[in-house]
Image (cartoon, rainbow, N blue to C red; front, side):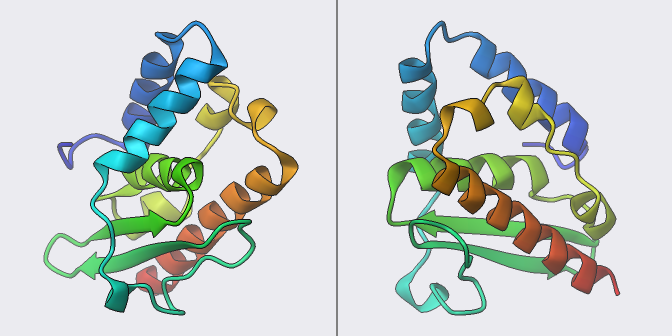
Length: 143
């Protein structure tokens, strides 16, 4: 995805993609495909620093600052397919964005696609934990 796409551009694209599906079973399948499309983390990258606390499943999101641009790069993995798909959504929106854009990113698009209404409360809590953790890391990179 081109680095010139803003967080809002990417969020709109995701809303457009999810609107192509008529039912939630198809949307879940697409979410799982998104997770399958991101490369897994190596075992040595599944560290405590990358671990997301507050998720029902094990999930890791690695964050690195590219000092030259400066933008953040994200990679993620999970032992659960839907959770990995949720991580893939976050990564897709935030990867190659400046720390300020990540720290201030708006995730209302998740409501626009109806995701919160179709996840269990535990998965919603995990999704919230992923977003909060990634945004907190971005704030640290920016300082």
